[in-house]
Length: 384
Picture 1 (cartoon, helix red, strand yellow):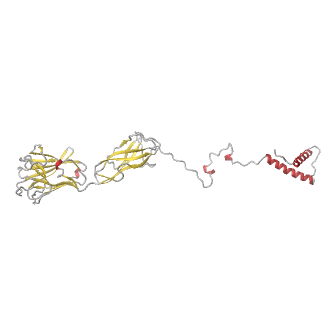
Picture 2: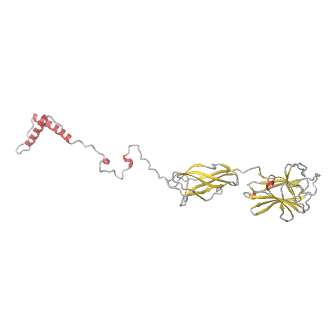
Picture 3: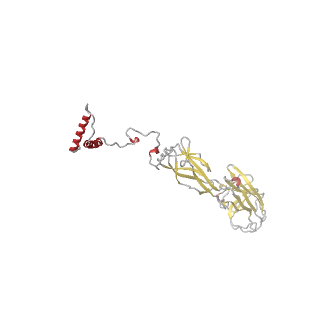
């Protein structure tokens, strides 16, 4: 306890005694003399000091922080923030299904692919949402160039949030040249589509198709792979070995070089055919199938090789070219030809067969007698 000076206790005692005297009956308040007034002022000062010691000042507490009091629920969050400070935005929850593109594993954009060619497109993507993708999820074609894409390809495994997975689809390039793009998304178990980012954008396969130009199919170089048959009249005929003897009575199909042509020129390599040694004999070759492109033409020249005496003789034949597509066999064109010193030009537009696998058949028919029918197919080819 704090000790006060002796004089202070004396003054307190005098004040108490004076108060008691003033309150006693019959006594009136006397007028203070100079000395008493001095003691009275001193006593008041001491009393005020004593009050401050035992009753310290209470620091004001804001209502919002006083115990037991809470801010009004209608008070704005910004009303208690310092000037110039704004509250942070509330985080947007991640969607259940969301795709993040990682990379093209195969066939990145604008890869060149031959026409009508199958290829496997593979993407690496990430499950960027909050839900697991199950085997009920899958890849769905949503637009653009279809390129033979299936409507739906199920996932082969479950993919948890945050995991990456490679997804693939079998596609086929178009026949025509150009840039082609097929667009895809994922489809969930409820049939709902979702894609990349918040906008659910598709991912895609984009390729460039460049058709070949120039020589595309050479009937001379493919002759050894053809199936050769000879016969007479309307019979089916029998197998004929390729590159057989020139004097084989069953006919001839072979490659010859540097022979004298009816035009008087010496040939390069030509395909020589001679019918079976019977009236109305024939020889034919069924060639391996060829996939026809837009703009393909079958071209060449048809004529005769001169006899050993450099004469035409009495050669008289019919050249025929057939095209078999599926179960149908169609005669494209035929040319009757005699040995007259001139070749026949061939130029067939194959646009009706675009996109089809065609098996071509070359047939030579003797028109009556087979003698002197040394017929050649010169530079026969498919080109653009």
